[in-house]
Amino acid sequence: MDIFRIEGPVKLNGSISVNGSKNATLPIMAAAILAPGVSTISNAPDLADISVCIKLLSELGCKIERTDNNAIRIDASVIDNPVGDYEIVRKMRASICILGPLLARCRKAAVSMPGGCSIGLRPVDIHLRGLQQLGAKIKLENGYIIAEAPQGLIGTEIFLGGPFGSTVLGTANVLMAATLAKGKTVIESAACEPEVSDLANFLNKMGAKISGIGSPRLVIEGVKQLHPANHSVIPDRIEAGTFMTAAAITAGTLHLCNCRLEDMMAVVDKLRSIGVDVAAADDGCVVSRTGPLKPADITTQPYPGFPTDLQAQFMALLALAEGNSIIVEKVFPDRYMHVAELNRMAANLRKEGSTILICGAEKLMGAPVMASDLRASAALVVAALAAEGLTIVHRVYHIDRGYEKIEHRLNQVGAKIYRENDSETSKSLLPALAAND
Ligand code: EPZ
Image 1 (cartoon, rainbow, N blue to C red):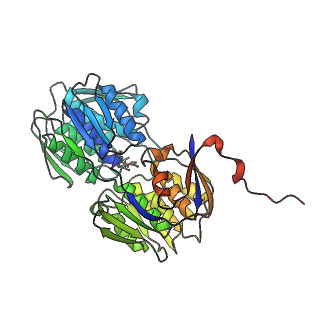
Image 2: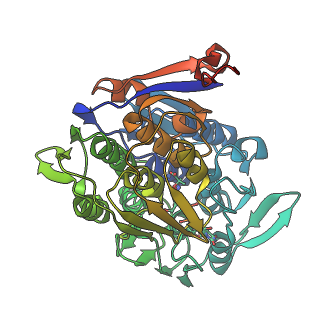
Image 3: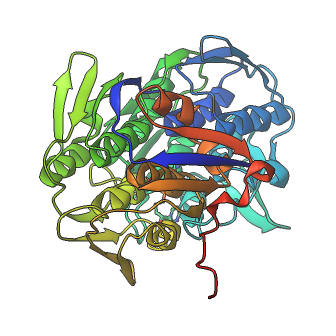
């Protein structure tokens, strides 16, 4: 397994281009299942999760090729195996979003239950309830969701809210299924994330009739058939936000190209309250910090609230604020695997239920740390950029799931990150203990 060897502190300066959104690309790839023929998705990032999705769709019968200009060509003419195999689904929970399109296209599907991950249980009960309300018969067998709709799906009114608010992939699943249902479907309490809007825009390019895009109330007039389409996915707001925290924590200046500030108002609002300057530029923005980091109070919420996917990165940033901060995680209350690792780097974080109390520290110290999930590992990299000394981040495969070549892109603006194989790591990190006299 690879590790990152990161030397700090550094000051980032320069320009980074933000890639296409992973969380838009995945459901849009699944949506290609809905129409026989060739759809092309461009601005698709080259990530481990995208490769898993390519394998998943290929197993269904799709013929897929990645072209060299970051486009994915999906030929969904033949879907002769509507099965989401456990061996693939267990690697990527987002695989669940093939269920809706398979039901709509093939009127049957067997998809492995995704199971949990380090950020939480990740239930899919709202997905299943929404699809059942569209007329699907659903049962669980040997860890698989078996869904059938032999007469096709029927449009209806569906409330998709749950105990933690809306569900992003639950909305995606029900939305995709509803495009080919008979009659009208209303989805109330739909997720409003930009990635869901990007999916809806792609579906409308395929001939779907969706209105209310971007609002919590989506109205879908079912159609008999969809046709393939071409689409360029939106920029990745979570990758952009991660780079913003990297600029802020190192008191540097980063010009982020292809960054849509309109998708990030909660994040920009919080950065400015922390004392970070975010200035719109013609093709993105410039993020810089010269003064001290101020403490903040952050509560994660569904969009347009503060995104849970940037909670860990902001925790790393606030670990160096002058004062005490609070973070409350309302979407995935257990999403705190990074807390103990940041404390190993001399952060002063205390967990009270789903709240983290952050006492700002003078400095962070490099240390060996363990990545646990995609965004927690990004937070460890952000912290290591500002920490004094050497940080070793283990299990960087978590980062590779959501950040393309992150070490190269950060090194181009002043970071010192070296990817090594685990076995190469010398014992150089062992502290020099004073000899017994
Ligand atoms: C999507 O996951 C994203 N993944 C996640 O990003 C993101 O953290 C999450 O939305 C919230 O914004 C992709 O888009 C591939 P949810 P999703 O359903 O759709 C509960 C990353 O780092 N819930 O919106 O799986 C659930 O437990 C990833 O890129 C139910 O109770 O998340 C959670 O508490 C991590 N029942 C809340 O809703 C359900 O049926 C929101 O989850 C579904 C969800």
